[in-house]
Image (cartoon, rainbow, N blue to C red):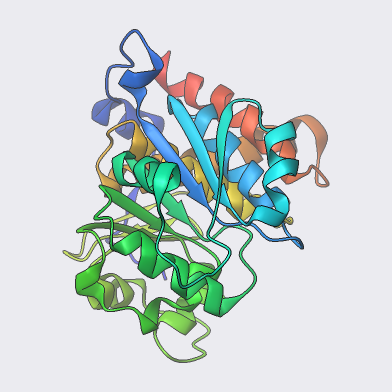
Length: 279
């Protein structure tokens, strides 16, 4: 996936890019929406949502199946919690629709486990012309069935290698991320390699095997969404998110060794970000 033309991501590069001024209220740091979850995986939405806030997003809402709405309302006091329609094919209406339509960044996919429900939900979100859309997990598996012209211009894909192969319609061991970026006209992040449809590419080193744990990808997707909500343009949001995720993994490995949990990562995202912003 990597090449000699990839730009290495360093704290110095990130400092040169900078981040939007945080302003003096939560409204200044953007609204992020996470859509996903299931009875089997309710925690994925929690991990992604917390990660978005930990990198500085101002306000969080989650839109989840009604079967887990109550659970998340208890464990996510920082978030507004809305229900998806009982009929997956129904459009989003009322407060969920308003929240998604006005959000600065919308993440779809964490915790979904039904392809048909995911496809219907993504189509419902696409009707609202959201500002920036980030897709993860099951939302990537159904993306080949979606007309790209119905999705927002600003689109970020966060596949693992298996999902990247699905996006190319095969089972490649080393999927061509540049081809994915061109095919879907999207920024792509896969294991710290970020590429754009125009051919720009960056490489995030670090992270290590400790990040290979359940829920780690949800944290990564949430971090990317959080940066996008703050107003960082899509490619740089993906780079910032990938770097902060990798650095959080390195910090935990240095402190504890292999065996940390995905729930440990969001706190370290803030500390990793502080390393850059405070220089």
